[in-house]
Length: 81
Image 1: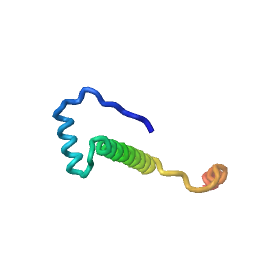
Image 2: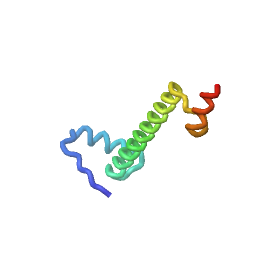
Image 3: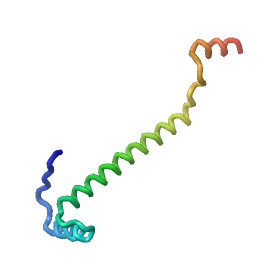
Image 4: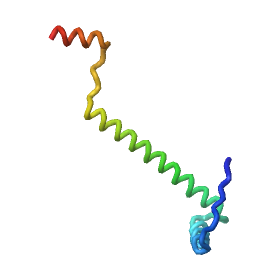
């Protein structure tokens, strides 16, 4: 696992975070911050995935996929029609 140091945080920020950590049942700030960062990273990954799926569906709606079959079969059917 990696380590992360955050420098130059205002004391008021630390006090608020410590208060929130205690309210959430944490004895120290470190596991609370770890949980916050982990949950945020997961949310961002899910959001990115949802955006990719939406873009794919939009593209498919604009450009319908070809029907099943080989290219040669499709060309032959088009020529016969």
